[in-house]
Image (tube, rainbow, N blue to C red):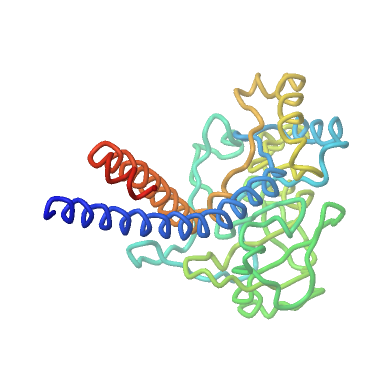
Length: 320
């Protein structure tokens, strides 16, 4: 009698554990389904952005844009020539140790414009230029760490357009519509620019001497070697596709047909940076819910097998 009661108690305990695992299973499923749906949505929607993994000549980048216009909705690329403030003042910035940096020093080498620099001296550059074809694609504009305080932005059709930081504008009493000059550090030529906007960068380590401008204007600050008769090198080349479902087809075609990519030891790949950024908070819960599902399923199966093998007669009687 006692043995039968003992068996029944164990059966009830097993049943309770089984029911608890059923609850865990459905709770984990309720967590996993929406998270997985969100991750899959982000994967499909953000898969419409691809990039060239290495720097490349601008003519190759433009060739891809024109050749595959049926796939490409928009594109962006950047150049970073140094400049000097000329007659304007600049903001003193500090390095990681808190030391003042009066100017950014760049040294010419065999791949730059060193032949313009007698005895290869350091180039005095206190202005950091970011030349890009469309302002909206500047890193920081989407999350609004960079925002325009006054004026407007520029696009691929803009000429001689520039944005300066609010600190730089205030220091030099610049306002939207003013024309100001920056110096090409290679040729010493003063380049006139129209101030179309004033921005504010909320990042603590942002360089207030950074000037954003259209690509055409930025190329005027390259040296002859870097300009390379208009076939200068561009960085961060992104293509924004009409449809994420066409990404693989586009990538396969471009990597095969654009021979300049292979010659440059480069290829087009899907950009996963934004996907990783947006899904990283979701991944721990996705992993946790998956683990809970596996544990609950294994536990339920184990309980069923245990009860059937250990108490076959009790199991049959309970069923009856």
